[in-house]
Length: 101
Figure 1: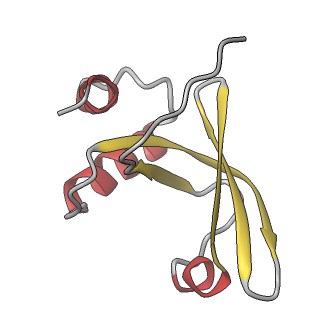
Figure 2 (figure 1 turned 120 degrees about the vertical axis):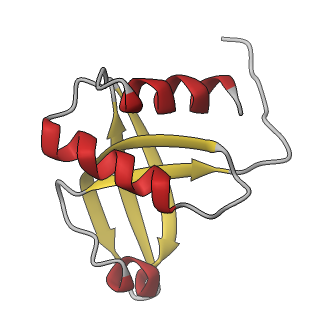
């Protein structure tokens, strides 16, 4: 388990996420239902959804940070994503690039 996932999972299990109780319960449910090989999950709240003809741009607030993802419009509609929904950004990558600021 990655450090990020262990921290987030531990915070969720211990009730220390700072999320309202309803969102915290939803986050625990998301983690319990996941059956993916990816282990980096950042639970947050959808703050913006822009639907295009084919793609959807979803912005998720995780703590003080924003995660942006582009998914198919069909996936967004099938998941019935709405502003304020609690979701998990699942990160699976074989490469992470770092740039010195």
